[in-house]
Length: 233
Image (cartoon, rainbow, N blue to C red; front, side, top):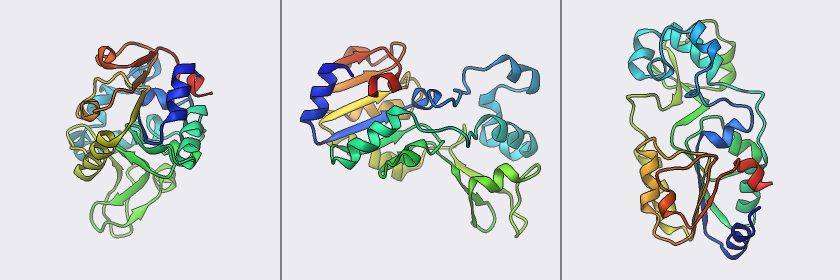
């Protein structure tokens, strides 16, 4: 780990981590934006269209075909970034993980206070009666998963055209405002409103860890262009 970063972490008891897809790609979960050749053969629509609210409503079979194949990775294991963050939380240094990922890997690694901006594949609800279903129900269902009451089961994941949960956004803003250190990792900071959260940070220890540059680089106090797993190892 970068020695400057190490010292900042040692000296702080109020760290917040904000993470994006890059935290999960190192656990073998592809960023669906980087569309592969296979994808083009199988699907007639771009991923942004398929995982939109209107597509879910009008083409639930195709939505679930894509969702089960491309959005759920139950074999993925947390990487060293996930474990390090959980450890920092246990030490009382890290106050919250704010994530754009929906895979639940932070919780599997042991993090307790995780704010999931885009929801989670592990939570699913009947749209009619509200009954809860875990991810295995979705994976094991044929076609569109249905509840006993006849309603369609929908993942608790924020689709395109849907707004982020206000409560999660407000909590995230609060944590970022009160953070002494803000570590941003594995995100290109281009997806709003999530990327706009960085604007609430008032401190002078903004650390950006990402393989490529981001629009916020000029505001960072430390920039590390490397894979986040490697940095946290």
